[in-house]
Amino acid sequence: MAIVELKDVTYKYPLTESLALQNIHLKVDQGEFVAVIGPNGAGKSTLCYTIAGFVPHFFKGELTGTVEVAGNESSKSSLHEWVLNVGLAFQNPFNQISGAKYTVFEEIAFGLENIGVPREEMIQRVEEAMQLTGISDLADRSPYSLSGGQQQRVALASILVMQPKVLVLDEPTSQMDPIGAREVFGVIRTMAEKGMTVLLVEHKVEWIANFADRIIALHNGKILLEGKPQEVLTSDLLANKGFGISRYTSVARRAKDLGLWKKDSLPVTLEEAVEGFA
Amino acid sequence: MNTFSMYVARESGLHKLHPLTKSLLTLLLLVAGLTLPGNWTGYILVLFIILPLALWGQVFRNFIRIVWGLSLPFILSVVIIQSLFWGKGTPIFEFWILAPKVEGALFAAISVGRIILVMAGFILFAMTTRPDTLMISLKQVGVPSSLAYIIVTTLQIIPRFQSKASTILDAQRSRGLETEGNLFVRSRAVVPIILPLVLGSLVEVEERAIAIEARGFNSKREETSLIEIPDTKTQFIVRRLFFMLMILSIAARIAWQLSN
Image 1 (cartoon, rainbow over the protein chains, first blue to last red):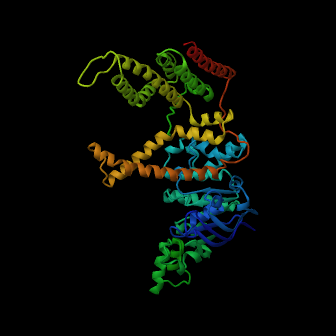
Image 2 (image 1 turned 135 degrees about the horizontal axis):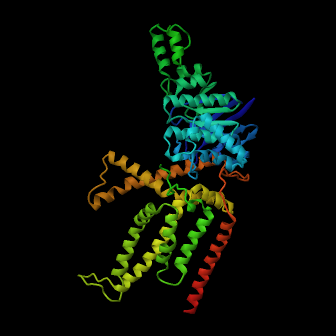
Image 3 (image 1 turned 45 degrees about the horizontal axis):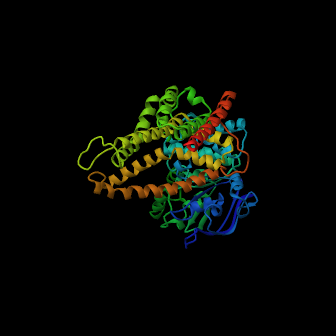
């Protein structure tokens, strides 16, 4: 059953002429892990803000069509109720630190204090979230004394701890090292398997191919392509439009032109490439 | 550890006091220093109350350093302006057109006492009170959470601004901006530093608003608190006492004013 449903959504930011999103139709099932790709200015972040309720509640502007999460319609709900169902974390971790807390532990608890979770339950949930994101050892540090990657983990933990039905993540690993990012993708995958619905904006295509169930390619505010990671990421439609394409796909495409690649489908990951060339 | 606040972690008795007790004490000292009749109240309060408190709070040396650094520009300007531009009086010395007056210097000394009192009061409070515990206790006495948030984050704004400004300064220098030299060269460098600082802060405000909203900041549910701030019956009574003293000192001032 679809937990997120966008019907013919078109949106324009205030004081702008161009449409940030155009006729978006999108259904996401509960527990599904959807990744969104696209060049700069394609509308990825706007899509995140729309599902998270900040469009139109926070940014104003003109929204047509309907956005539904768990049966509620965003234009008919208030933002403070909406955020209980949909969690949002975005790229810049520094600006996601509340600034009112002294330690990482308290920082993660900030959201739970706001929504009135009892103290014992709060402590338990914060400890779980820290363990999941691998930051238990940072509990007593000041959030401002951490590295960018560590701060991103704190930002992710701060949203995971709220236990939203839908998790919207806008490039949550951009400041992490490759190993750290891989770890975090693993965590997000686990959350999806436990029933949390995930929408992730990400440029690291080789990895989302391994973790996501479905990929949506956005271009100029429209959905250009949608489907299984392997199909979308190797599609010719993405060529020359500024999409990130896996180097394995590029190599195999070249090899195919030279008659060296025998399979029908192109690879996205190292494993697929090795298998195809073997 | 870069925490973006003046707070210095210590295990002192002053640190352990309830934030409300400390804020009322600070307020009382300021009110008393500025309203009580007498020219030297500021100095007396700093010398006999604030300095011993700073010792008790185990932050004495840092405290002196910060108070000195922050009040010096004010002190200098008050002393220079008041002593030089005092209208009529006994000159201390005369040199060219400069003739500082005794009366002006005296007035400056009285003002400096008040400046030091205000500075020292706030700084000692900020150095010994964790911003988050202040926020919680403000909310407990009925301050709306958005106002409490603003108060607490404002306390941290100066160190954060300083750190951002130095980052921008380095970035602009590495692109060839001249920041050293005569007054003219230096003043030309102000715009390329201030502009990114202000615009960047506006973007930061928007993102931070989204981030805290996403974490239920505007939730209508009754808030809970992770930290429990220890309070005692004695402190409760002491706070009442501070409050009454504050009223008394204002009343004393009004009575004194009327009788003159």
